[in-house]
Image (tube, rainbow, N blue to C red; front, side):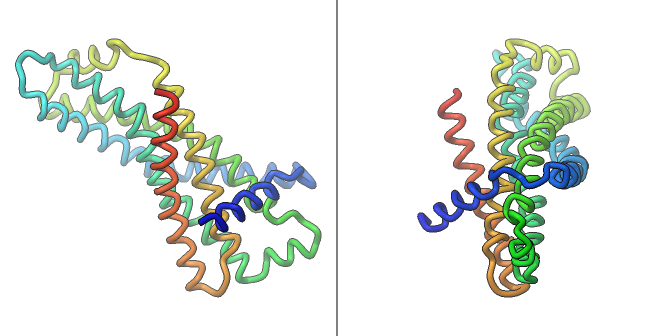
Length: 243
């Protein structure tokens, strides 16, 4: 574990070395932003909407007391969505979609000796291949999380009102009562850290893969597993520090 962590830190040191030409990096950044952000909108939209609807129904099911106002359904759904569900669930989903893709892409370049060719030409291969992905990750994942928050709360409204668990007026009153904007800051900090972990950890596993197609597939699977564990651990640490 310490060996891999040390090698990961040394890789990051190479990644953040001053680029040779920002113009080349900029094209890669735009391409990765399009893939990570725009390419994930549909998946995040579907998952967030249904999670919000299901959360509303489950909260309503547990509030069986007549002494608890139904407006609390909107409040609980809002806070749980912003603080936990949107950033963490979105990150885990993106770890499977984006993380495996990044690891496979870089791993294939390693086993086909394309990375060796870049290094022979004097190009900083870690910076050229990984830095645009990290910049795109820390930029687009927070935007996706904001998108997920909005759709999850909207999904809760639709699920609650269609099922009759809560009226539209009660839900709207719940999500607007006692709202603390600080929860948005906590969620965005989580999103930035998660975006960094997803891209950098996946790139690390792909960059040092050895062997052939089987090893690339194994590295991709390992990257997704480590990403999920890292996301959950970082989620706990950030929540402990900020709340």
